[in-house]
Length: 116
Image (cartoon, helix red, strand yellow):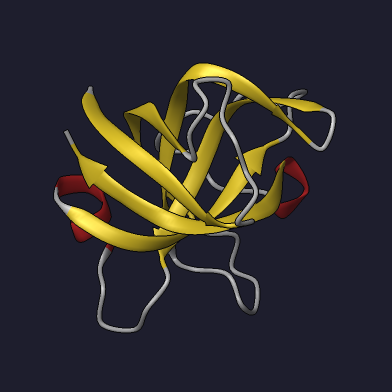
């Protein structure tokens, strides 16, 4: 399992329980995209080390994908990358190697991920 730091840039007023807009996650693996317009082919699935509440729901898993054309999922997984982030709804637990169902997530942030 790889360790990463995620930083939320938007929403700009996000604050993790640690008092910052940054938090640690553990890389779980890759999910296949949902074969829908405006959705990517693959997503990086991450477990939030210290879960937090957003919009009244507990967030213990997130998915992310590169935000900019030319960036790759490999960059997000192995170095630093600007990403779009969605939180996995608390009633679902996603598993690496699975296929993403858009009903299982809520898009929530733009930010960055870096390997630590």
